[in-house]
Structures are given as structure tokens and as C-alpha cells.
Image 1 (cartoon, rainbow, N blue to C red):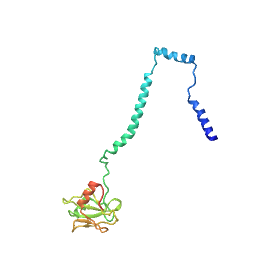
Image 2: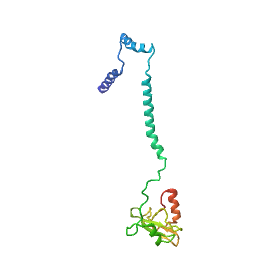
Image 3: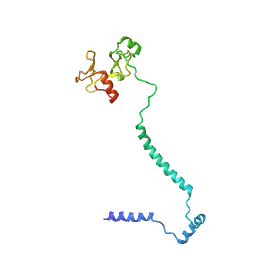
Length: 184
């Protein structure tokens, strides 16, 4: 009970700090007299101050909306073409870089040979029918169970030994193109 009475006394005493102070009528009339004289008897509004406050209000709203809106809009803008770096060099079994000209001299069109790709993973380099390399390499590691998926030239398909799925290189290309990930 003492706590409640102490709390209420504190609140009532503290609220008097926000109450307006009483003003003597003579002081009030003398304080307003210069302003009334400058405005010709009307309430004077400082236009420069009003413009400044409007600029502050509009500026803070613009900063807030821009701070939230610009990242939101940029989320929907596709990334640029990137810069000069390009891809990662494929490597042979010994870890030496593979060069396209030398590689194409030793591999026939339609060939699917393994090389070292990103992080040393087994990656298929595919020679197209016109004798050039595909623009991509296919990661040969199964994403389900982690085994290396071999290319079956007789069936013209990749055949996973872990779970028995079969897919052609064209199907994998379209799956990457449309869904952005591999099948295996």
C-alpha cells in the first residue's frame, strides 16, 4: 500500500513539471506588444522558418523512403555481366592447366572426359559435335550420395551408380538453365 501511495505521489508531483506556469496579465500584454506591432495586430508567422521546417520534414521522409526503397528496387535488378576474370581453369589428373587447342586435338566430338574443376571436383568437359567445347563443365559428383557419376557412351547418358538414375547431358544442361542446379 505504501508503494502505491508513493508511486501516485511521485506521478502527481512530476506532472506539475509539465503544467504551464501562471503568467501575469500585465507581463503577457507587454511580451506580446512588440510582436503585435510588427505584424500589424495579426499573428506573425515567420515564412523562412516555415520553409525550413517543411524542407526538414520532406528531406527526412525522402531519406527514410530512399533508404528502404532503393535496396528493395535493387533486389529486382539482375546482376551485371561481371568483370574481366572469367571462369576457372580446368586441370588434368596431374593438376596441370588444360588448354582448349591441345585438349580438342586429343578428344573427338561427343567426348565426355573428366577433368578437375572447382575445388578439385571431378568435372566433365564436353566436346560438341562441331568440335568445340561447351561453355560449361558438369560436376560429376552426385549431390545425393556423393559418388562420381560416370558417362555411359553406349547409352549416351550419365548413369549414377549410387541410386540408379540416368540422364543425358542435354537434360542436365536444360535443368541447369531453367532451374539453376544439377540433377544429381
